[in-house]
Length: 541
Image (cartoon, rainbow, N blue to C red; front, side):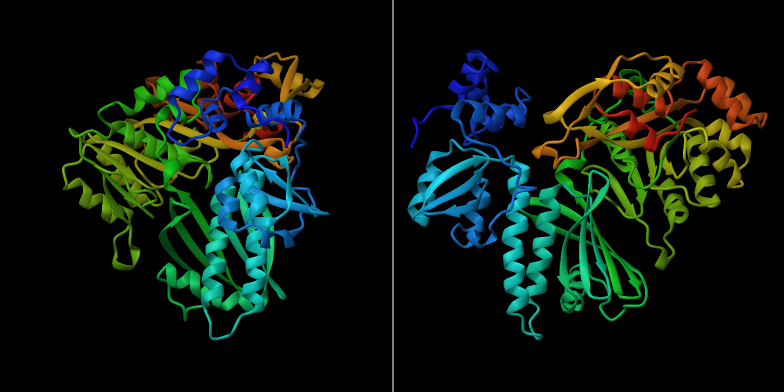
């Protein structure tokens, strides 16, 4: 075994960190936390920098498990629990030597344990944590599933229970927002949506379909016998010590029921306003807007554009003992202490309009209506804001300005819309450039022209060239871009005079308002996302 060095010394030798930074991190890290993890948490180094230092200083190669031909038979030598606890996975074995991919190749205790328990000499290689977690899910769960499916007895539900647990575990570890279980003619395809993109993960045999879907329905308290009509339900559970809320949706297709499981990670949802990627200007304007005592504030954007997170962050900011906040939602996405949340239930006549009516008799200061879907809800929401309440809601429109005609199209009196509306915010999510493989390139002529039209000039832009950390996509994580209209007297007059949305847009442009594309391009300038991503979700104004 080579000389056993300390990570702190390696990082100092490489000139990445100073003695003070390392010492301060050691003094303030959580109990039992490794130095490398504490440095990553504090943003002092990236995972890729850490890997490069270990590679260079220790001469240990790094691998991409995403593309590596892993020998799945080796999982029998190392238990899944040990692999997950120590973030490692055996990948190859040759003549008494076992190659093990490790997030921390300096974890000498784990290496010693493996040598004793397997009888092989251990040769560590480095891989990213995400890479290892995904490989553990893939190879251990795959071998478990094969064993389950092979040994299955028709009367037994146990395989379906365990397969469901494994699917959820993989979903949470991947950071997926949705799991799709798609029946086809010959098998069951499992796909995960990560950072807004669906990826096929595995195929399950067709004959597991009925028991797996029945298992999901039982957990979500749905009707097992009802297979020809769509159903919706929810499950609250804990996956790997992470509390998650699951939304279940079933849809009958020609090959059986398709199931989509939306994963709501309760740990990550309660963001404060500073974590919502606002530009400095939008942050202060939005804060001013929501701190008004009354008025109607609308959020617009397609499904999955982060509207709910923004609404909850706004409500959380206003959540004080001195105010009564009531929400009416369908469904109640996240439960928040100190807020009265009402779940819509149309089967017993409790829709948004009815819920809103009842709320008004409960002496509220702040009301949140999940979505304005019809004239009745729009009218009550608007009247509530005119009688001294602050009302938040969402609308499905393509831009902030388009929310104005949408409300008027709902047969609400224009003068009511004009006097109640205080602000509208549209938002979209764009993929973020992976921090570990970020690099720059020169701007093309077309991009120069686009930037010029938006009053910007850049010589180069950032992009991710693809690495193990981001599964060679160049992107990791997502962020929001916004456009915020604060309704002033001129806009009110234009609305009353029935001016077109184009006229209103031109006026706002003259006033210096930043539209979605402008906010996106500002984030391109900061090196956070790419022009392609911004143009994917925002059109030119």
